[in-house]
Amino acid sequence: MTAAVASAPSHEYRGSAMPPSPRLVRSVDEGDSEQVVQRCNKDGMDFLRKGQYKQAFDQLKCAEAALQAKPGAEDEPSRLMATTCNNLGCYYKKVGKLHAALSYLRKALKMEVALQTDDVTVAGTHLNICAILSKLDKHDKAVQHALGALELVSARASAPEASQEECAVLAIAY
Image (tube, rainbow, N blue to C red; front, side, top):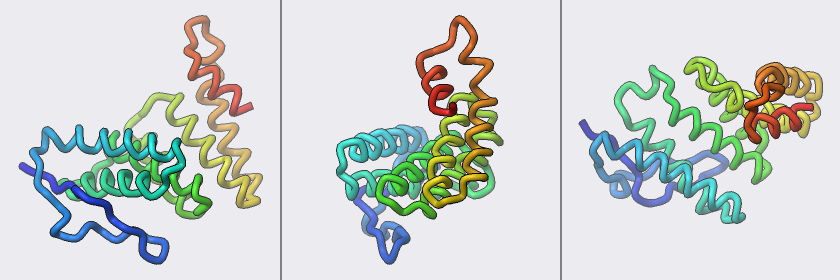
């Protein structure tokens, strides 16, 4: 079985992404599909950290297109789709498109919970949602997400074997 993967960037059109045109799509083995999506996510976030927003967008939308091209992608959440949605949420937050960011982060949170993703990751998503809701002056809802994050990591972060990441997420939640 093969999955379609965009081999060139998609472009933004009036606030929404246009799907890659058929000439921009190539076929890869399903085994390679996961690696392509992981690479697109990694590269996208690297570009985002460097302030190269167009390249970040292109890479993250490529990852999303590859995942959506897989048969049954709509029916079953996946770890990679949750990661891609989370990353797209971070991208949209960074470029100031807060409603798009919120939409992607809510999708990511729903998938993470359904997949029983580790508490630190789910808490991080709650905190990203919290920050956006606060920027949108929806402070009551923001506090609820902050408290959700706090609840998820407080027990783990106080354990002697707590990781630096767990402690950082706890500090941010406070």
